[in-house]
Structures are given as structure tokens and as C-alpha cells.
Image 1 (cartoon, rainbow, N blue to C red):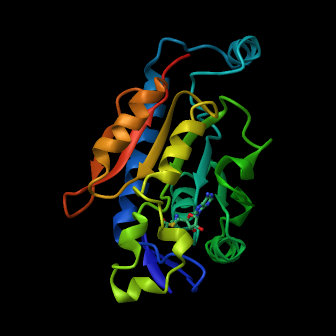
Image 2 (cartoon, rainbow, N blue to C red):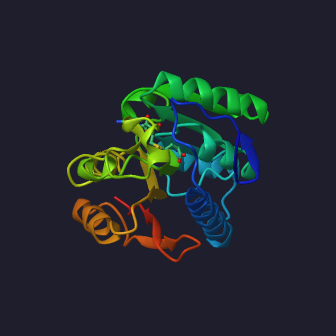
Length: 243
Ligand SMILES: C[S@@+](CC[C@H](N)C(=O)[O-])C[C@H]1O[C@@H](n2cnc3c(N)ncnc32)[C@H](O)[C@@H]1O
């Protein structure tokens, strides 16, 4: 068992052991979600529920957070640590958590059951967004979070011995470490609603490259860096622009 966000989680040789620095991803997500809900309550659109429903019919994409039931997608869930922490912190959230590994998803589901949040998290298998096809229509997702593999291939072999038994699939981010990040950044904007947010855990030396990739899409506001307890850049959060 491992402790993450004060939750006891089972791990196995099929999943990455959740790291303390990944708690920064949970903190950043909660901070952004709290800003999004505060913005919504201050906007002069104190429209009635009926008016909001009508405007949603006119435009498939709504800028308003789904305050009553936010949709959160976690790509690359592994042990389910991040999804489960978010489910306990945002009890109204509907969470879709994906991974390519059946072994990881089995562990994640068992962890969710142990923490009584399995009814609010759908665990789906597949390559990134392919896993959620149909369950998260375009422009519908409030928050996308991911701690994807981001270690450059040549560095995987030199990681500390205790990390060597962890699945390579959970660590290896391709030649420059950014292969999965690049894919997530390219495919997420169409799923996130305007004003929604993408939050990515990154390697300490990847902030500049990730900010550049986000900027190149033209679909995000300037990304914000969140640092871990050691002061290293650990998470980048970028809100989706209108349009
Ligand atoms: C760094 S681990 C993160 C696990 C967990 N979210 C955490 O923070 O402890 C990355 C996870 O991504 C999964 N993964 C790797 N490539 C993937 C892909 N293309 N689509 C979905 N999941 C993927 C791996 O199986 C692994 O469980």
C-alpha cells in the first residue's frame, strides 16, 4: 500500500507507484476548479436555469463550468491516484479515467472501490482520448488532467534501481520525453469547453517545451506553472480559449 493525498492505495508491478510530487497535479486542479466556479458566480449572467439550457441548445459549446456536475477526464490514470483524490475532493464530479493498461485499470478500479468512489469514476481502456469516445463529446469537458510518461527513452535505463521494476509504459515518453504530452496537447482542445482547463504533470526541465507546444496550437491561454514542494516546475495548467 502507498499513501497519496492521505489515501491508502494498492499498487502492483503493473502500475507506477504514485509520487508525492503528483500531489501538485491534484492541488493545481483544485485551485483551477475553484477559480472557475468563482468566475461563474461573479459573471453577470445570473441567468435562470431555463435561460442557460436555452443558450446551451443554441451553442453546442458552453463557456460556463458545469458547476453542478463537472466532467473531469484523467488520461493515463495508472493506480487511479489522481482520479480518486479528485473524486474525494469534488464529490459532484463525474470522472472518466483512462489507461492503455488493463493491469493498471484493475488496480485503479479496486482502489476506487476501497475509497467508495467507484460509482463516480468510469475506468476506460484505450489510447488517450480513444478510450472515452462517445462519453465526452466535443466541447464538453471542464478539466483534463494527466501525468503521462515523460522520461526520455535514453534516461529510462539510468533511473534509480527501485524504479526499474515499474512498467516501462508508465515512464517512457519517447526520444525527447514529450511524445505523449504532444499527443495530449494536440487532441485535447476539441474536447475541452471554452474556459475549461488542461493540466499536465511535466518533468522539471520540460516547462518551456510544453508552454511552446501549447502556444503553437493557438487554442489555449498562456499556461501557468505550478511548482512542487522542492520548488521545481511540476504542472502546467492552460485554459482553453473561446473559439
Ligand atoms: C506516469 S504513469 C501515471 C500514473 C498515475 N496517473 C500517477 O500519477 O501515479 C503513466 C500511465 O500512463 C499510461 N499510458 C501510457 N501511454 C498511454 C497512452 N497512450 N494512453 C493511455 N495511457 C497511457 C501507463 O500505462 C501509465 O499507467
